[in-house]
Image 1 (cartoon, helix red, strand yellow):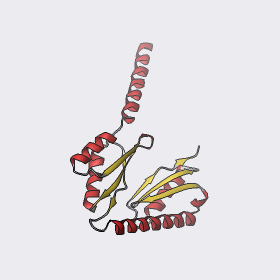
Image 2 (image 1 turned 90 degrees about the vertical axis):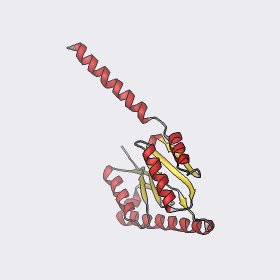
Image 3 (image 1 turned 45 degrees about the horizontal axis):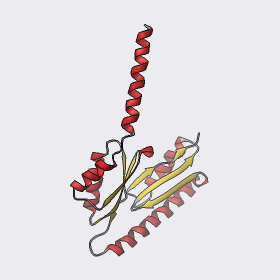
Image 4 (image 1 turned 45 degrees about the vertical axis):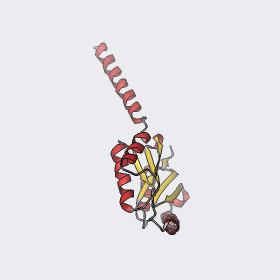
Length: 171
């Protein structure tokens, strides 16, 4: 009976080690190759294994190309969260599109800050940054409900394409 218990514990330990190794795998190179095959060579890729996130950046010339890059990355990156921060700049209007995107990100940040103040969460250590319609939340809050509320507030802000909630709960 003791041998069975020891075998069970050993099997559980091996499963845990195998899972942690699999979760620690880098998907950056695979995503880059898949994007190149999809003729999306101007897309940049960064990976944060600790936050289980792959961030797409760079510039494409259409919303369809941006969406395609996101789909390719999701299909390749297994369980990673994809933050699609690619800028869309139609051919011939690069500087104008960049100004519009920057102004829109500023508006998103101001609207989110107003929502935090209205909810009282501005007293917590919630930080945020908008880039190409992606609002990334960082910092810390007291409990899981406050973390969820911060994300829900962000979801109600106009023009946000995605909320990336990286807020930590203080223990």
